[in-house]
Amino acid sequence: MTMLLHVIARGKIARSPEGELVNRYEKRLNWPVKMTELPESGGRIPEPQNSFKTVLLDERGRDLSSEELARILEHWRDDGVREVRFMLGAADGHAQVDRDGADLLLAFGKATWPHLLARAMLMEQLYRATTILAGHPYHRAG
Image (cartoon, rainbow, N blue to C red; front, side, top):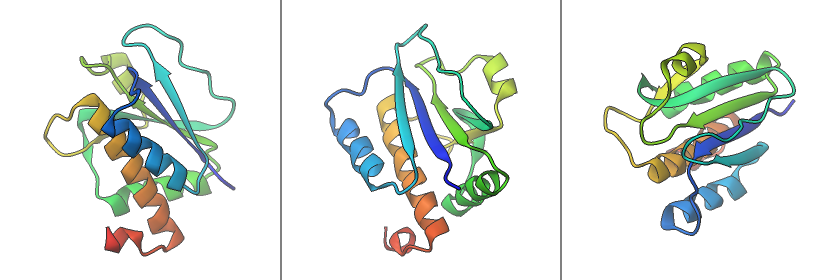
């Protein structure tokens, strides 16, 4: 069974070096991936159709290795989760109610990253995690 990796981000990435990176990793991913962009505020997050998990990118989240992220995705996939939603908030981050309802808070270290760069880093980590699960050498070569 395949699991949809759904990246939901505030703000438009448009034509930019970060956008090119996001597109590069999106094309390389062997798992189904969907990108949803929302305005800086407001906008409607699409309702999931089936079993799903929510991951918020948050500077106060867990700093996971690529292998740890891969194992979490593997566990969810094997448990029948159909979609994992990776939420990137606006500049002011996520509301506490959203943090409380998330299945995982994920950080990329203690540093604060620009929104567009964080999106590119997330896509690279999703690509890396899926290659780890596939036994592909990218993980060690990259």
